[in-house]
Length: 85
Image 1 (tube, rainbow, N blue to C red):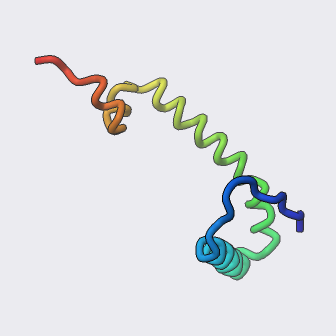
Image 2 (tube, rainbow, N blue to C red):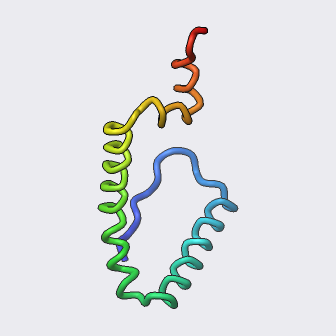
């Protein structure tokens, strides 16, 4: 395992830290049982790539479709495009 770099900023509350670590270990155990440790490690290497291309796909979808139709669902931006009647 890689050694983690020390975090900068305020220390994390102990409850949040223990919940985060506990949930991570629990998810890891479940994934190891379901698909096996080999595939979990393969999936970990692919996650950043999948997130990147998912984001690119989302931006492309907004760009090539009616962007105002999609942006109407974002609360802050919705107020900027109010129609004057």
